[in-house]
Length: 165
Image 1 (cartoon, rainbow, N blue to C red):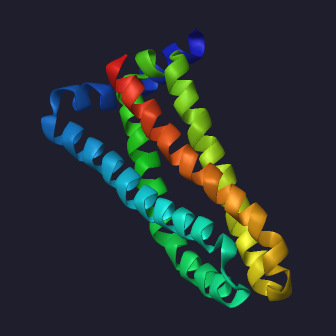
Image 2: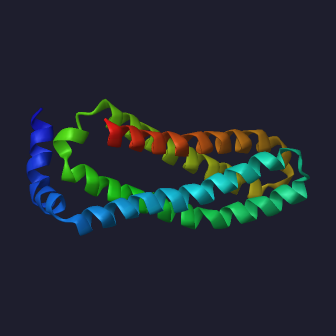
Image 3: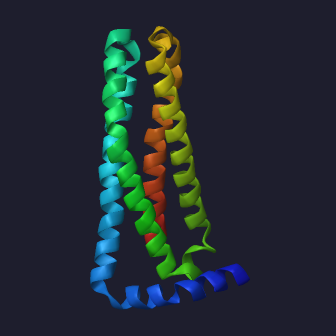
């Protein structure tokens, strides 16, 4: 695989430094886990609130959407932390990760998480702009929240499988 070899050659200085530095390994892993815990925790709490509101009034749902909108920044911050640290961990061992089907599975789950998050945020904004449509939009919002919940756990499972492979 020439692409893997090329990427490994580009990442070699980082891989060399990372492999010899317990501090770098600790900081990168902490950043990865903190991003997943912080961003994922806030997202899962918001997802749960969306499910619980399936029988709520439109007034309660509108307030919830405002609360959920405030959750986007910490969720995106967590995703950015996990993404950057994930790239650094991958760059430290390109030849192991890039050919791995487990790694690609985790990346697919991460990509689906991002796509679902964009879809969820788009529906939230539309529902806020047209409150009269809130009741009809809620089943889709609830479904996207369920996907979000499942995908956060799929990404974590992918990471655990990679560590134990």
